[in-house]
Image (cartoon, rainbow, N blue to C red; front, side):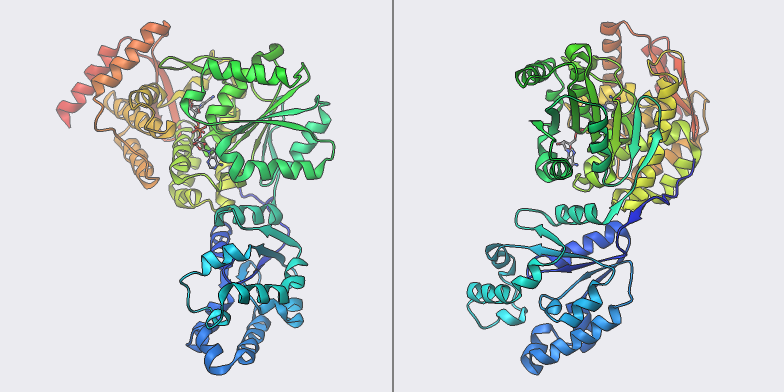
Length: 540
Ligand SMILES: NC(=O)c1ccc[n+]([C@@H]2O[C@H](COP(=O)([O-])OP(=O)(O)OC[C@H]3O[C@@H](n4cnc5c(N)ncnc54)[C@H](O)[C@@H]3O)[C@@H](O)[C@H]2O)c1
């Protein structure tokens, strides 16, 4: 499988950011340029660089008109530039001629901040020319009033006051790009693409789902982007009615008490057999929401819109739902694949780096067990993926999801096919995750688990030591842990044994055989594994 994302569409070949001084144009432009791998242009900084003086000095020494002439000259030079984000000086777009040149073929965005917010930002910044000698608030108001008609007439208006620069950049991307690809057209359709609200709307309309639609959302994500995302849906369809249910995503939420709460909440809002539950969150809500959807009225419609990288490429695909029972993870659950799963990389932009890395661990896992080329791709592109470079991120999400879809479609119930291979690193990982009191993220525990499994594989002569070297290098490059110092192997193995006894399950471990190849092997006893560890320790 090779992905080049020909289908990533840009509605415009460049973005022009306008707004008052202090509205955050430069910061947002830099972030956007980073996501897109486009050029970043700050017109004030360019002029300063060329003229060898700050904007304030130019104003003071040469006067405003002189500066405006420099601006105009620069605008002409920028006229033909494409694939760039331009942060304009606050007054640059007052000139009609500048507007005509700059706005042609551009997504033009106004970052609209209140005067109060502008003041907060401008506090302590002394090199802003028009504010130097005057009472700041009054002056700002005056400047804004003189430009209000132009600013407020710009095509995209973003209320910037209570949003981080990343949220603003994300909102702009929703106006700029879109893509859509169906990677699993069967009964359980998996869509990948940027900006998928149009597809979501179609799905909700086609299925004649009863109203309201239930939206189980991660409360953190809801504030950051979820409300905006669902708001887009409302704009697209007047008839759309929804009941959002917000929950925190901690492992404690994956409990039968949460399930009970959700059943009751949905019944209270007149859920029926044609109801639909949309899960908008990470793996925790995906697992618990999937379980609720699979059991309420013996199964209602389920749409998964995962918002963490881990959930996009792993937990939302394949239909494993469930909750923890005491300290045993995922003990109670069902197989219930969502009718539609929508993987939208744009939703990941607000995700903290640690969560991104946790997801990358699962990406490395599917590459290690099933696709050498993907492993090589990750070795090359891991930094771009972690930096959320959209093209690479979409490529990686698509690729990883395809591997998972292929495996799960052949063996939905994890019976006699290859699905067991997806547990690579997980027997150790689950034990480590619990023993760390969930201080470690799921993917971090899996990373350590994969290293342990690969070490064993090398010691049992099932694979060559280069596999372990490449795996650890890649994990380290992704800043993932490869060992846990305060947990001994004895502790981890005895936790695995205890869980095995309580669940009467066979111990099947997945061992890498090569990059892109793994095998599940029944291990008779924990002692056998301990012996291999001890042998290895003697020789190392
Ligand atoms: N069902 C399966 O096949 C399967 C597979 C792997 C893992 N899992 C389960 O998944 C769970 C872990 O999932 P996870 O890693 O997604 O964790 P999570 O759901 O706890 O989310 C991680 C954190 O990210 C926050 N968050 C979510 N989306 C965000 C966004 N876009 N921006 C900012 N913050 C955001 C959440 O509030 C939370 O704090 C574990 O319980 C694990 O057992 C299930």
